[in-house]
Image (tube, rainbow, N blue to C red):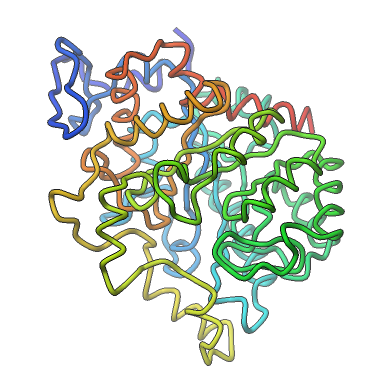
Length: 416
């Protein structure tokens, strides 16, 4: 048995039993017996042995503002290293995030560098559990030691103006993936999907940044981009791109969801689409219900641009009110998504672009309204069981659980 598999096995009890799940969408397969982890949660043998990678997991905002340690088990939120291990996670896009609150005062550069630095400190502090990976070979090497791999991914701007010198500095710090759009705000080189269109997609600076990221060997993430921006970025890049976390517009017509057209273009270039775990992007019933609600918890440009915050400390205090960045509302029974609906969204993508281009990007601790069966990252095996109930082969499930992410990282970063 490989050391990584042995480590995963140690989280399991020697007891196996059936785990029935009531579902509004799919009838569970009879006789689907699975072992349990130490938290008495089911983990199929396939999940335990597979390479499992989350394409979008928020991890540093609370640590920055609350002084907490991701190596300790939290009593709230949805992500920490102990629970990630219990969920069978081998690697994650270790998302470092600069939200819109920092943009008006032009604190986005300062926050980005301090949160990246903190991420490196946290990884070093918890080196017995996790290590920084710069490429696919690093991820595999780290896993062989029985540890999780952290692949740094920036969400939010490194600089609203797109200064390439700052991009290069972040690369030298170990950042290997960047989301081009500034979260929900159009910046100086690319349009987002839910802000004004300034460039009709991307402009010449955007194309220059894409060339630079190609030359450096950095993964280009176009989640949150407008449809035109996605299409133009795919055309401009010589490497595959990723759409780390979202749903399909063909299922839920939310502007954050990728269109069939853009998904096909991304896949044709060898890219990968990570399915978000939230109801808002994946459950038509919930989406329709939300349209009748007066209050939205989505961060939009207009909600922060007028904020009279003069110092970064004042911004920190404002963001702290929202930490941890997890959904705190209640969902009526009839609108609460089951994990089997999430699996159906994955299947929509498989039918649309093929199994080589689908993956998981949970956005845990980033605000999603999670399916009934998923309370936190330790419940990651639930999505494996849902795919098994769809009748997916082990080979297909393994690709979606992580091998597709690993493949695109290898193609983009090489040995750098």
